[in-house]
Length: 281
Length: 231
Image: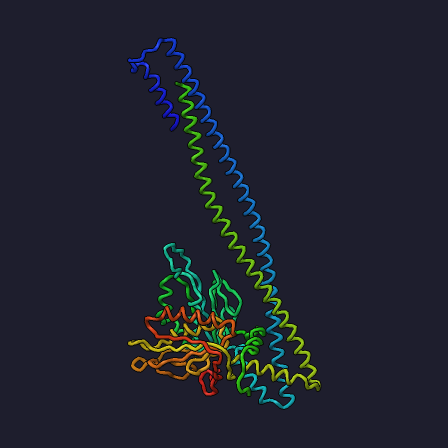
């Protein structure tokens, strides 16, 4: 733009002697004046060009430097990401092994407790203890039931501001409450037994159940009357509405389901420490 | 003239490239910020998961060790040692507390839910409240002195004479419901805050009042209740 203006100026300047009749100049003076102006203009042009090239160079340098730094940051983040993923895999397999071991030990302990009590003539106490443990959710429950699998919609809707095509903790809570109303004897979410302290909370893309976090798909298993429960779930207006919003809900009847026992001793111990028992039996 | 033309076209090219670079730079800044933000989010999320699992595994290892010790001591019991009968009784009491089979008391909050002018209390609102109380750390909960345990059902029944069924016991939906929850002293405020948020949400359909108290008593699950008998 400045060059165009310079050109206009130069046209104007070169046209000036012709139109400026009141101040005629001698041919020598005029050519000298034009020559000086031209040199001056060339200097300005060169200077501007230099500034432009300098700016150009600076931007190019910033661009390259940013690119390199971003690349470095990303590759370092990628490396960390991979390390964490590996660590997470190891921890998960260790966790599975420990949980398996925990279940086996708990079963062994219960059997031994029963033996000890029966051995010492406390068979009534053994029976009562088994009933209490069952009610508390501390025993494995086997039987017929249903399996419900909940997944987010596969279609991404950018206009869905309420994220209604995603599964939320409220959806899982709704199913759990419905299953309880339908008379379920035991319920688990992704293998986590529902007990009196269980809360189901959304934590980003995962859902926390009994202090463990799970990503989609969420699998709810329940020991219950499969036929009645299936009908209740199939005809529930809220579930039909959620399916219409895009979330994927699959209900399956099962002849045999095993719901694991709640085994977090820390939670059981802390509850018994924190609650003040009135008139203990 | 020729020179001027070449300078002008050179300048146009330089300006064009410069403009492109500026645009690219600005775009890059946004993209870089976004990438950096998401990378950080993802890493933080992973870090959290690693930490949680580490803690969980450490707890599980301790639990397994304790169970192994207990099993070993019970083996001694079978061979004549009488020490672990007390351990079994302690375990029984813990299981009873966890099952909701003991009367308990402590500091906590009390919520009174009443039907609005033309609507009755709905089970869905009671469930919403109970779930909020649980997620804010309530140690024990009751509705109208009916203890809420792991498999307690809360559901609506009846149309002409609406009732709410809790542990198999029916309560008229047009009556008031008293919900009590025992908390750790440090969790009471969190509970109050969540209940107050809920009161705000439901103010058009339900009248709810909340108060805290140093002594809240919650009875055990009734032996006659359906929840107790059905398990």
